[in-house]
Every structure is written in C-alpha cells, then in structure tokens.
Image 1 (cartoon, rainbow, N blue to C red):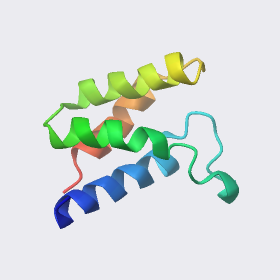
Image 2 (image 1 turned 180 degrees about the horizontal axis):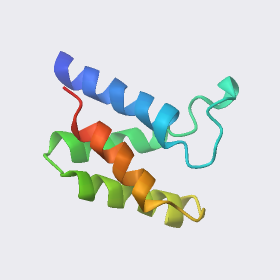
Image 3 (image 1 turned 90 degrees about the vertical axis):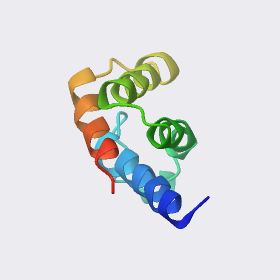
Length: 87
C-alpha cells in the first residue's frame, strides 16, 4: 500500500466511524472497531474509481442486508461523496 493509499484507507475508516455510523455507536470508544471490517470493501471501491452512487449503494447494502437496519440511502450518498472527495 502506498502512502497515498494509506491516507485514503485511514480517511475512509474515520468517515465510516464519525459520519456513516448506521447503528449509532460512535460515542462509545470501546467499540471503535465496529465498522472497520467494512473499510477494506469501501477502500477497494474507492481506489478502483467507483463513483458516489456505487459507494452509496454498497453502504446501503451493508446497512440493510448485513446489519439488518432500516438504512438511509440519502445519508449513504452524503457519506459516499465525502469518500469520493478524499484527496
């Protein structure tokens, strides 16, 4: 992993924790790793040029199918936009 990719990876991890947070646990430091298992998937999409909608759909799929929560596609789009715009 290049240093640029490392920055992107760490930024995605932080965005998932602070912005995405579909089950509302980011105020509990003991579960900081709650979303880290999804970081590699989103990172892979990002570095392979996925657009905002593709990333949003993956986040929404994780929310609804993997986590079993109601999901919020508009929120996923906002999060995905931040991910796409990581420099």
